[in-house]
Length: 590
Ligand code: FEO
Ligand code: CA
Ligand code: CA
Ligand code: CA
Image (cartoon, rainbow, N blue to C red):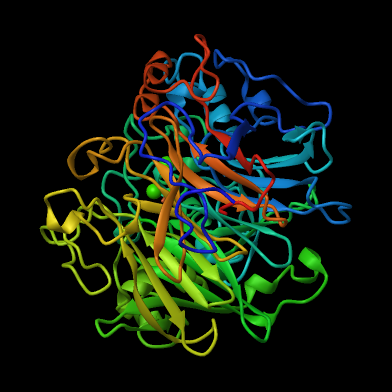
């Protein structure tokens, strides 16, 4: 194993320092390699258009290439694989696009073709990768290769399927939805499927100048030039004309990566939210429990408990497992205890008199239901992580500078810092089993920088400083991987003055010891992480290098911030997957 502090068995590498370089840095003895950048062909048979560095790929070409802004990622062993150490599938989200980067001339001459390209750069990619001559590379063409975009047809399962609030002119039955958008965190089920979470879907819709109460609760507004402008060329995204289309997004979507012709399904029993992550635990009697955050200020933490046990037989045998069960929202009490409150129609205030006609309306209006139930308003709950062995569950609360200000919620035990610029990670164990309806909680850590003067920004990290935890994953060895998303507009100043670029750290959940494992290039966030079953290869994503300049309508600007990973004079910064291995082939994290 590597030198340095040999404090714990779990974590053995030497920390990397903070960095402002336009590069990925990994510990001594580790090597990092870039694959699957935005625009590379995913490997569809007969359709492998090369990336054009000037942004001139068409919408149709983009639909056969890696999407923009990689996010959550998982490694899947193919059905019938001879050797999982030598090949597998990577399934990953493409959260959103910067139109300034996506098109040759940015948002100038806005057109139907640009809307189509933007939609094609969203969604999910499935790629096949293989380990050959000491390196992982994409297999192209591959029978598993697939792009799922903002226009891919999807089914609907659970209580909102066919609901009248899901019916539109184009889909009067409310059973067939086009596309998935703003796919952020992810989950991987024990039956071999990928869960993709639709986060800030509302930003894609044009709303009325005066939104109604439901539209307001979900943040619908009249589109201005900063937003996507899809509605100008795709009427579906004009909520003034098609008010129910917004109800068809904000779901967790299940995808079977083993079958490139399978139809993704929106699982409405898990509730509608600006979902960030859907992490699975399994009860002793083999039911699935899905933990979910909703990344918005003062929103909630959820869990879903399946009615039925997971069956042998993979995706097909469990095709409706996530359609039946109970959704709960968390209330964190000051005594370190908490309650999972069921979102069940007819129970408590969730009645027709209060605006919930049936369970379909409860899951469509999850936020309003949770408001009535008195759930705890959290500091932007992002990813959740589960350690099946210790039964610990964690959720990152990335930050909330509005906490305790103006008319906003005051601090409370679970969200203890006003002007929370640094974020926390909260930890709980459900009573009895993962389906327990009460829990015991504590803060795993308050993130921060101990060198700052402001007391509430110092935090209590045992080890290397960081801020704004977002991506979170517990690997099979029990290491808790923490990824940061400091906003690029706040980076390098204020409380984040010392923090450099976004990063990934490894923590030992038993001791709290935390070491910085990786730093990213300029203007990026680090998000999504997965490790092969042999523990020897890690894949993670670098999202939006070049921000905030990449948000502007000038493709030359972002290059001045970051030109990662290509560093070409005529290039543009690209989100990409990074493969990390130990030079000696050892276990990642040791
Ligand atoms: Fe898509 Fe909450 O980050
Ligand atoms: Ca995130
Ligand atoms: Ca974030
Ligand atoms: Ca981001």
